[in-house]
Image 1 (tube, rainbow, N blue to C red):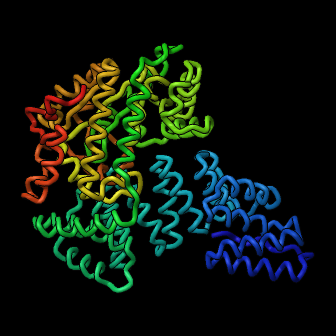
Image 2 (image 1 turned 30 degrees about the horizontal axis):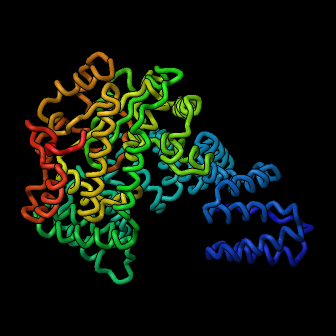
Image 3 (image 1 turned 180 degrees about the vertical axis):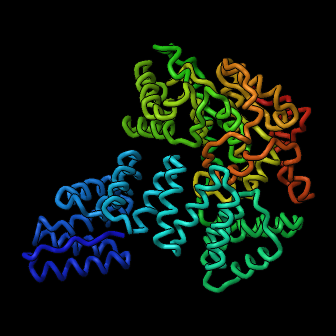
Length: 545
């Protein structure tokens, strides 16, 4: 949404007509036509602020955010009090990784248009994504005070409330959306995805009706089906839940491309690239502030981060993107994909990358000296991370392999989990993870620690003490009371769970009977057998160490 800047009185009639046409085309998302109409306006009136602004909006809608920033800044220079320009600029600045500048621009838009609900919504969304959650909640409440029917603002508010443990408030907001829009797929999924909010028999009926409603999109059916599977689980009907999960996953799998063989070749290439000893670091202590927590989704990484973030010397940064972004940018700079450039990197290159990472993550050390980085793709980048940051420490989280695969299969992910919608794909991915993780543990024995979820469940204090010893930190009892720690947890599927004391009865696979036997055989053939609290993660004798 953008506010209009009045056209100059000198705007020729033809340019005025083309500008109005561009607005109509933009409203219809006819982006190529709108771009051409705006180009025609600017050919007649190069200084037309509205045309420059709308050209920026077109670029933004195309995903060309760097171009959008350029155009919107030019428009803002000519119309510094246009809130629409500041709002659109803030959105594209955020998308290009300039979070603080984006928030400043959105705050300026709110100052200029304090009664505009979309401005407050976009500000709240940016604050939430930047983990400024309480400020985000305030902005989103302001948006809803101005427009109580703003559905996206209410769902975003619920997500923010859940991330700081305000589960009841979050559920109430989602129920409010569903009262007005009974088939709203994203509201249903957000409610189900909190995990700790039970869904009842009436919810099962409503979800079935919404799925069967004519005209329901494929994406909506997928979200509603994952929600229905959770509701059926809550009723104890695991057979029906699994049938729904199979349909939901099949629908999602048909919408994505995942090549397990290609991914395995990538993992093998990473292992080969880091098989030789790394170059001696210029500063062996660089990165001592960094604690990487890696694992596949639903393997307990959020719980481990919550435990560590309860320590007075550790900040939890959640799933930040800095490490993969730095590796991707270095690959782009070299014109060569990772890990092919690893052999050519010098100690100076690695130190430059390490310092860049520390500069980007400086905000996480303003209150406490150390911080956790829990991005779930980092398990592939441990070699790069420890060569960049030789003082860093890595915790590899593992959970019973069947439970891990099932937990992922029960979960719809918004991104970066294309492997999870087929149990064979999921098994392949877990096998790749285990292979490379064992390699890292053998390659960097003093810097990489394996942590089994079942061991943590059976002996929390003992495991936490060993974990803190590995990090050269004193034991602190707040780590045992992690569920009382007030902080933002961005993983919606885990935010409610880590607010509760540690449980031992979280295993679910047995409830599905023989439906997972194929998965069990597939994992066992690769040397990954179900764990027990006593045995931890089972390994085949022939497993590569």
